[in-house]
Image 1 (cartoon, one colour):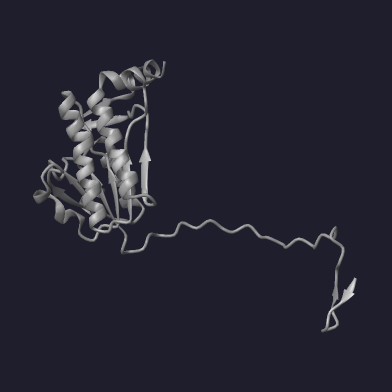
Image 2 (tube, one colour; image 1 turned 120 degrees about the horizontal axis):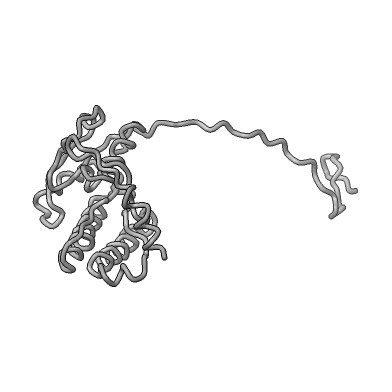
Length: 212
């Protein structure tokens, strides 16, 4: 033991373990997002996009959606709390104003068709959105990509090459605020007009086949 100039005893024993601090578990709180946070969902009237819009509205976010058809035909109360924009990501003149005041973007834009069409929709359209959001100073960008299913990638080459190109652009423009999600086959009950389509009937077995 040694004595300091102010008279306190100091330990010189390297094996001495100080008495641990008492740590109390913090209570988890659901804090509402700041009123300045505004989310733009690209493809917000689609199957995945509409669910994202609804969840974001329920969490108190200011939500806007951009799609080629604009407001959907869904008859639910949350739809009235979304700002609906109509525009085409392949034509910048038709949608740039939708980024005004936006702090975060989630893109659900994608599609199937010919190889060139799939690359254009999954790749070029999303790349245009990523670049525009970066130039506007958007803080975060989430891109819904797709899981790797091996042989399917070859059969849908334009689809997956477009997705990969968009992923590369996102991680370049949003090195710290970009997120890529690669879900498997997405299915659930989809409302088409007054008809409910149980996509899980084909989705679950199809995903099992693709995984093998």
